[in-house]
Image (cartoon, rainbow, N blue to C red; front, side, top):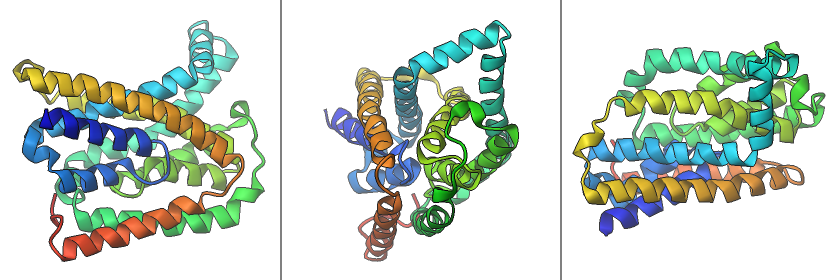
Length: 278
């Protein structure tokens, strides 16, 4: 029961943080240090669990934007212009992170998944978010997904590479790239969501191949199922609210939150409440 309880907590954190600009990876590291999920579950299962609940969060995007995704997919396989362009623009945006992710994945896991680097990512990313929002957010010229160009998609994809640094946030990085490329708030966020589909599904799929699912215990299987469902349901609610928030308010509130969490994390590490190396 302790494993399942901790799994629910981790899944809630994933569902809340995956698509808002606060870094889900950073928060997962923080929460794991605080509740000891890896200690209860074993590090190998905890890593696999994080991949599974990430897929649950991705499913929320598929459900919320099903009409658009399914319509574009049908159009793509019919070789129609609208579908071909929609998915080709997303593909262009996904290429930079796919290349650098494959090249640097092992190095990043070995060197950047710790308290200090996550704290730095949260704080540096927050400062960048404030700067980019103040300078570019009100200069939007793109108000429809259909108007995003290949050049803009590539620029957003390059910005997405910042998220390889745990704590920077994939959502924050891509939305900043969208602002700089001329996308308005809603379209920048939606492009970020769609861009997550190939990037996160691909990365999650590659990681799942590393794990042997045959050795799972009954409790671990239940934890995976419950975690997947919880992450899906929480993300479903959060994404809908996040889009509504973006239409009315600036994102600097998330930047302030990130700075507070980053500083608090450094203080907790300094006094030994959480480990410096995760």
